[in-house]
Image 1 (tube, rainbow, N blue to C red):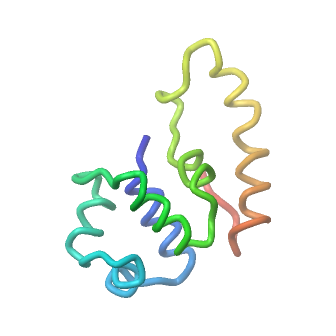
Image 2: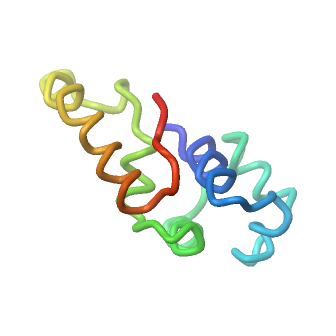
Length: 101
């Protein structure tokens, strides 16, 4: 799971620079930078705030952060089957441009 990279990608897709987004979330820019680099893990409460400021539900943010290594071996086939469809639905519902793999 790479929550920091996902936050950064969504932040950029939404047109926020790091400083203004950190301020919007009540964070310092250096702390947001650490989260985006994967050096700090946001608390659940902070993750909810970040998701809200990205105008995306928290579970969607978590889903977008998943990678195949996060999925149980018995469920990888289903994950592969659903991944593209889910990302397409998420893009249409919450983002202005398509998600890229």
